[in-house]
Image 1 (cartoon, one colour):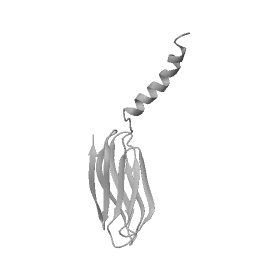
Image 2: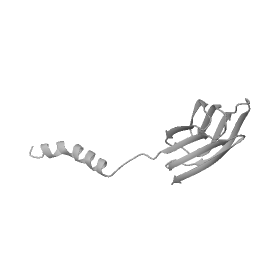
Image 3: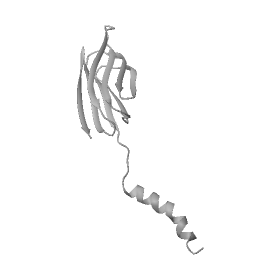
Image 4: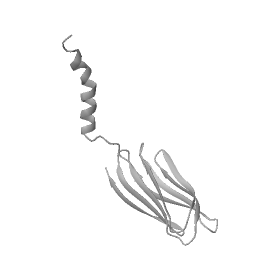
Length: 119
């Protein structure tokens, strides 16, 4: 039974090694920017396996969201403008494991996408 104290330390040593290795989960910092002079409503950003959004986004405002990509696929942003017209603009494809930043800027009848992603 001389090894019993060492055996008890193995889980603690393993946990410390994992913490020191800097393990982290990749995620995307996403922003939806309303660059129009009017509020937009029913804003939704679809990404592989999920979506997020907000009921209203004021003129000049930014909605921030953080997510993890599960699977691979295209993005899309949907919104309703002040004149009650629905819009849908396809965006970039995302792959599981990517991390970085994604911005969708609503500009009237379209949206512009900006990405800073790492594989």
